[in-house]
Length: 95
Image (cartoon, rainbow, N blue to C red):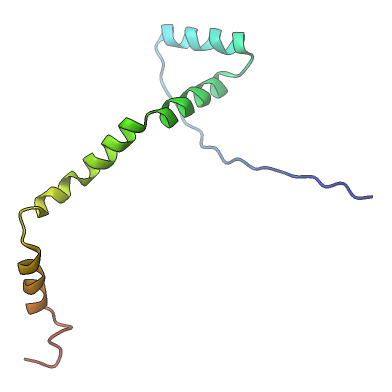
């Protein structure tokens, strides 16, 4: 009889952070009281914070679009006509 063994591999990246003494102490006490490692407590806290901050995610998205506002003053039709008039592909064979 064969038994099926299922493995789950989770890839993680090692990182280093600096904490002031008071925050490190709080983290250590919370980890001990909850029975998890300090690393696991940091991961859980970050995951909750990142998943729950939809407003910040939306704000970041729109801030990244901000450079595109420089195109708002362009007339699309004129821009396309200008590009087509200078196109080497469209004017191939014409000199």
